[in-house]
Amino acid sequence: MSSGFWHGKKVFITGHTGFKGAWLTSMLLDMGARVTGYSLPPPTSPNLFELLHLSNKITHIEGDIRNRSQVMETVRDAKPDILFHLAAQALVRESYANPLDTFDTNTIGTLNILEATRYCSTLRSCVIVTTDKCYLNNEAGSFFKETDALGGKDPYSASKAAAEIICHAYYESFLKQTHIPMATARAGNVIGGGDWAKDRLIPDVFRAFLASKPVLIRNPAATRPWQHVLEPLRGYMLLAEKLFTAGHVFAGAWNFGPQPSGIQSVEYVLSGLKKILPFDLQLDRAPQPEEAKTLALDIHKASEKLGWTPCLNLDQTVQWTAEWYSGFAHKSSPAELTRKQISDYWRLA
Image (cartoon, rainbow, N blue to C red; front, side, top):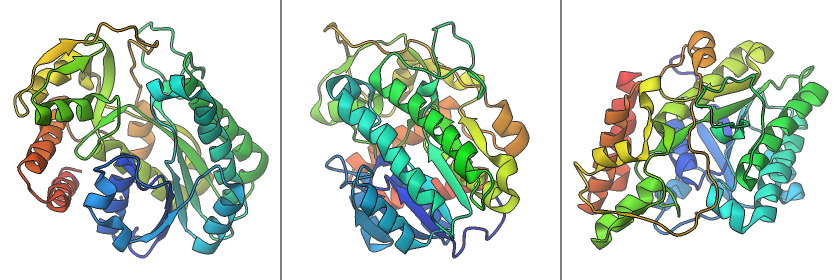
């Protein structure tokens, strides 16, 4: 990224109280950006947003992306240069329990953001974050490219595929001839310190570690494109900068995932975590809703056209994640743990 680009930029983030949103907010503040965040209250307790005291450092607005009038008013008043849309119902298992809320949040919520975007006269760059699960997965083990078919067997995946289709339609119909270039970003399985979400591998491990209980594992053989949270966030920031400076040539869909060596099984990740956070495993034999067994992303487009490639291999990713949680368990300052990892990461990037 260009030195000094973010300094003084007015950035609007939805979902800033979530795991990825809190890390992105911290990275942007580190670069000198002026951040406005719009989101529901933090989804867990504890949560990274409050641990980092981010509400004191940004314009923090609590709201629901399904509230169209509030979304429109908030974006208009913020007058952002750049917008990141991260707010979502992001859990596959939760989508089975509450499919209507999942579709409402991930489709209508995204639609509301797009409506606000196209009427924002100051905006020059818009990045809509979806997921690698937006692809129609036939479990063939192939690496998904941005041009592959979209779809989903579970409500979460289907809602995100629908959001991608909505974004494409809005771009072609309303934004393509304007001053607002827009792109969608599809990242793999993101891990890192400060995630306490329900039914996610790393938070489940940490909770089990603190309670001295076994970790219940649903499918240790499932493979995922694991990456540290800082990796795709740097990709989102780089993409937003390119949209701002070069315009519509960078519009469209982008994958942000690990190198092929980072596509490993749940069991592999657990073995690395155990070196720093010792715990026992127990196979969860209860009936489970269907989830993808294999996922892999082709990242050639981001590498060739954005100049983005991952900085951390999987072993480093797991180590950084475990070290953050270990530090937190031993009463280290979450702000210092986060600040140090961001600083160390920028030196690598």
